Image (cartoon, rainbow, N blue to C red; front, side):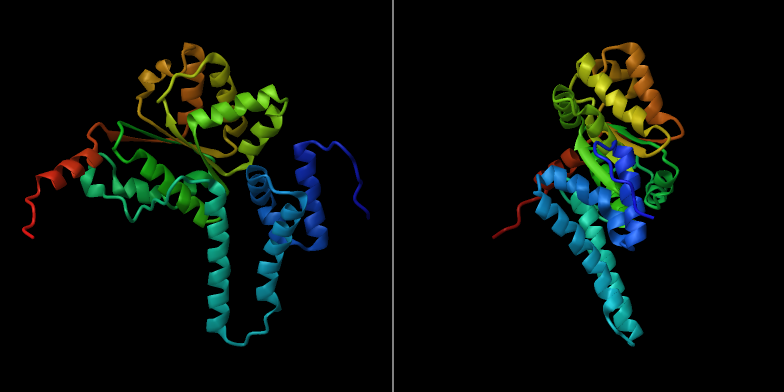
Length: 285
């Protein structure tokens, strides 16, 4: 039975058509990774040919293993591991993290406010599976961004679609999209990812329009996909960022309902580390 062809499909209808077509054509890799590749194509401003090539290469990478006649179980496992690694690398790259951070590199001893057991439980990504939020609250230098990026990386490695952004950058993108009549498309794009990581929320005051646009993104994701934020302000201080008290309360509600809140404290371990190094006696040359 042929698929109906229509012009001007909505984002939801287009996604459904792509899913159906990939099933019929037996293109599992494109079906699983289309949204991630499409988002990256928009961000990188790929040509249509470049986007098509990226899709086809994704399917070819996965088909390569199936086409390999291999009686060696160990070699087969190596090929599987390599394919999984490439997928993880693609998802991590698509997330747009500004730098590499891992949980293994985090010094829990330097910041006793952060419970290692809680963080490693979060690394299982069960909260993302349940579409729950995460809030990291604390002063600069207490490990919020490190934790945000590290947990986002863990999610990408486990197969989740992740997007990282600064709060001000997201708001500016939304304002620009609204001016260009592309707001619904942009909100839908941010709504599709499994985990949206918003860093530096609270560092700058947002005008009412920007705050309302951010609220629309959070509403789009509410109880459907997870949001993780890092902020240098306690919730009581968010009225400096979101000047409308009712809007501020609504945003806090969406970012905390059924979620996890980790307070990273006020003592900068980065500053403490710098001071400790400065106090070490110089080594004689």
